[in-house]
Amino acid sequence: MTTHREPLPSVLDTIGETPLVRVHVSPDEVPVYAKLESFNPGASVKDRIGRYMLERMLEEGTLDGGGTIVEPTAGNTGIGLALAAGQLGVEAVFVVPERFSVEKQRLMRALGAEVVNTPTADGIAGAIDRAEELAEERGGVVPQQFSNPLNAEAHYETTAPEIDEALDGEVGAVVAGCGTAGTLMGMARYFREREPSTFVSAVEPEGSVYRRTVGEDPPHGEYKTEGIGTSDAATNELFDVDLVSEIATVTDERAQEELKRLAREEGHLVASSSGAASVAALNVARRIRDGELDAPYDSVVTVFPDSSERYLSKGIYGSFEEWQG
Ligand code: PMP
Image (cartoon, rainbow, N blue to C red; front, side):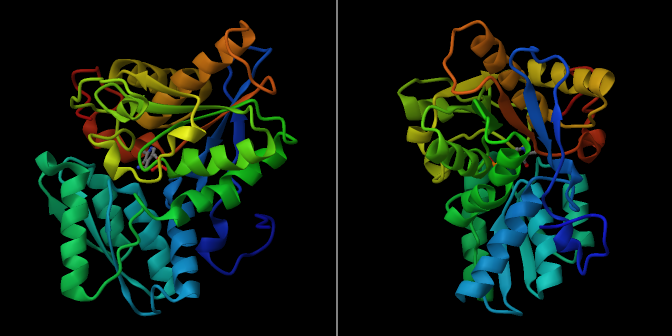
């Protein structure tokens, strides 16, 4: 296990073992704990999959040392993969829809990667198509976080056991925002294997359409919350509805209010997907406390995926209208 009390051979050895901190406003009877993923070297949860996917792919021979990866990404995955690629001797190219934050794109380039933009209107599906084309042209491999089981496995093997150990196995509910859904699926599978009645809440912003997987028909719309949600759940191949107890929808307004509250009252410099996760996790904790929802233990775990510093240029701490999302 990584220890931060002795010298480490590589920055990759600092990935994971992030702090788990109690959310102060959670009910005393049912505390909410948040895993602070901005403590990773690339400052997001995606460093975990960057390292895990590339190491496994090199081991399995699906990627050669000195080879090229081409990945469609909203940004954090690009940073996590760029960081790992640089240290593992792999070339990295990222396809990023224009609307995503410039900070992330600059960091990917700083880590030695190439960034290719696709039109915002084409969504993540457009970026996926372009990545496939580029991989073909350049003889590269697409790790494809949206369908690669190694993405969820990274969380099954690292994020979940860390939480399990910190809470002595007493995890009543797991709540997380879903982009690829890798974070939630890895954790859900791990905790459901140990305790099948673990409550699992998938969080999406209003405007996202994950709820179509449970027979509802929410309208698709634009949203400002970055890193979670989908415009077509067929893209999010890792999302397994059988591992989910509910899909919770959080508005951009509530997510921003909460991320501001988390900074002001609790000292967390976290971004909009953390705000949304916090709103949903607090809601689950209150329902467990009030007997409205059954869970095997009186505790709720969530993930704060990244830091607000990555979104300062988009006015994340401004008024709702100023926040560009
Ligand atoms: N929050 C942010 C800021 C992200 O970049 C991501 C990844 N897209 C997530 C949450 C969701 O993580 P996952 O892809 O594992 O569902």
